[in-house]
Image (cartoon, rainbow, N blue to C red):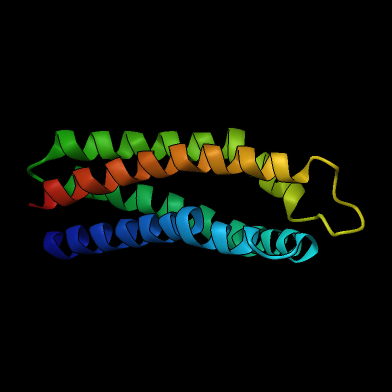
Length: 146
């Protein structure tokens, strides 16, 4: 049972890292290459879609790591560190990324602010930091699974 929990946790966190990596290095670049109105609308749609899914994924990942740490017999230090990184990514999301996303997902070409691109660039910079945190957490989980 513990082995299944470990594998499921590594896979779920790994998939989350993959999605966030794709957002940072593929989707945002594809969207930003679109004409201005289309790019803004695509960012807003992505913000609504992923904004609904990712909180569950982040918190669910953290819960899985916590259960693994409590149930596990080895690698507890790695698991606690991974959990701390995931907690930090959630805090970072709530304080830095979510406020920008909440604004972005309501914008249309008619009501977007003049600095909408600057706000999305700031979101992207914060996202790179969050991606580094969750990638480090994933790496620690993979090592703990060993």
